[in-house]
Length: 308
Image (tube, rainbow, N blue to C red):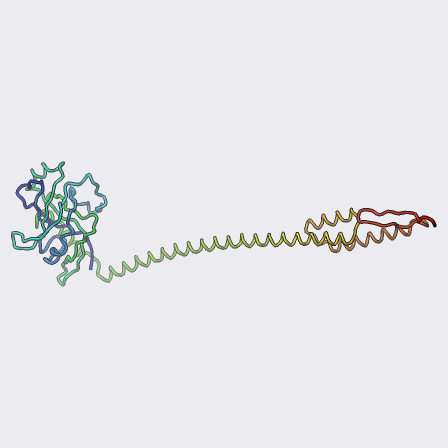
């Protein structure tokens, strides 16, 4: 089963236009054509694919593709539904009412004997035992389907014979079924490799983003934990200093170190020892009859015993 765009001659049937300006045209006949073989069943079952199609000035170029055409190239259209009936040879054929564009009507009518119409549509089919392409379907959804004005259509005329020879030359040079399948498999593998590479890159990028986000969150948690520990440690330092009832200068120095995160337990013990030694020294060196009245964290005082 294969698909391709089909090019086949059509022809004007009417000797003159009808009252509404349309011409009766034969789009395609049963039998062998330039692009393949067309059966009666195909035409009877799928002729509606040509309903209301546009007409352009000639077919698209072989290398341009149908998407290269634009509305300025429109030369007419098939009006309404197509139908099937027997042609002059008794073969089934597809007919329709064709309306030329006003811009080209006079010229088309003047040269109608030297011009013609040719179908352009995507279809599918298969090769029979003789190697001929048998068409079994017209694509009714083909957006580029058309019935185009051509210079030399001829049901079996020179122009279409030339087209047939082009297709024949392609058929002679076409690769074997195995080669075609191998090429398709290779193309599919390349597409899969590219898709996998893209997917891998996307996954890696997302993983990197997730890792960065996790690191940011971990750093934030660590910062919060460190701050909480620092606050707790400072509170413990204040408590220890207050309980030691140190001199004010000692207290300020130790709390300054605590605010920097230092462990001040040894400093508190050392300061407490210094304070005790200082008080002991003062007591020992005080004049007889003088006693220490008391001391606080900020000062200490002496007084004389009264009445001794």
